[in-house]
Length: 316
Image (cartoon, one colour):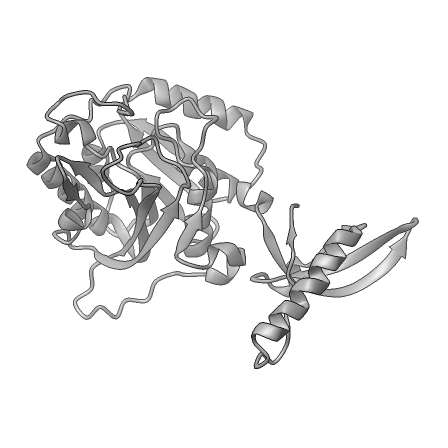
């Protein structure tokens, strides 16, 4: 399929057959200007073809309609990752759970996206440095549905429900996903050649992650500018998977050898099977010391472990 379509998200969703999409990863506009009665405010996101200015009741109704369609087109074992945030106006909080609970989808888990920074400097409340990623699944009468899920594919640092990921700053879009975010969702809940959908495609980060991970993709948006940006990014990409550049945890050193004057270590990565062991040359002294220190600290903290894990952070 592999397409970025210039179409309204609801109209695009209605074109898709039932039970046809394995995974939806998206982040709709937050309607923050609508909450502010149409007034611009510091930090306001300005989109190309959407003014983010709806009556809040209409906005919630719109989102519920979208969620109903997503529930229809999701495969029985599929997943929706829906990024949203708590919004504030006049000392009142507007959590997205209010309208999510009115959709037919089942909330499976809430992931906290710890961005670490925020443009909001309002001194009247705690700084909102996190957003939410709602993991939703297709409704089932018995709530006994089995979904695709492969947590072991992810690095240990992303196997929990809090993901520390800095915002993307190098894409010419007002609110782009960091590439690693859809990569995590795709790896954890899909297989190669599955179909990934983003009905608010924007700069196409979800689609690029799907392409890099050998999944099929489909995106909807109204903006020709964002479609053009996606096409440029697709041409320029080098198929690098951003996740592999993150910190990994070594479970154990399996072997070592000297080759051409260099020491090579065969490493077993925690969260990956034996077929994905890798060789690293010339681990420096401070890395060996860190490995040694963490091993002994772990043994002091928890002596009940059957085997101790060697841990150190290593950038590939």
